[in-house]
Length: 209
Image (cartoon, rainbow, N blue to C red; front, side):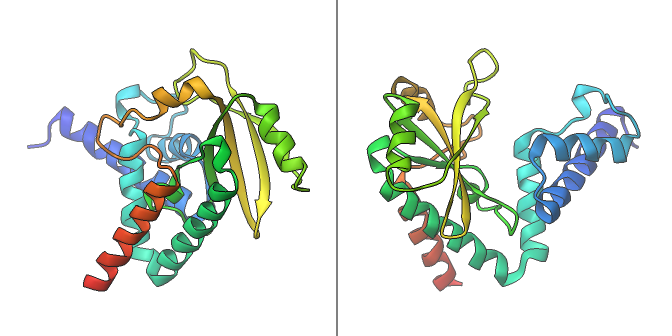
């Protein structure tokens, strides 16, 4: 017999699946996709918090969507993004680059950009480095990964081999907090060595299949 708890779980799953489709098909960000999907499923703009899936649940649904509908092109696209990310990380090695987001967790599709986090003495140091190499940058802000209690961080965006890179510029002392694992054990960010190991492991798995 259905219970109230089962109904909540079902609605949350429907919202997560709807959000995943928007992310995979349109490149929507997680927060926007979650709100739109909740409106479609529930018909309200302010749903109860317990009905809203978290990012991990939506990420799982994006992964399922890509496995069902992405086909071989998804793997090719993901590998190309990771190769480009490695090139950029090697160029920015002095600023301790870490990869995060969809390119890291494997859900990146045709609409996704590459997201990096850099840890430097100052944001200006990174900006000057890029400008001295004739890289055109746009400057914006991104919420701090530690949450709303901390000020947003400056973010530089630029094109690299036809891919858009967004590099969040953190103070060096933020690095210690950045290396803490997620509660669910999933990788939050990896350095260049970690990304190479991840790619080598994926290649081994493909060869074994």
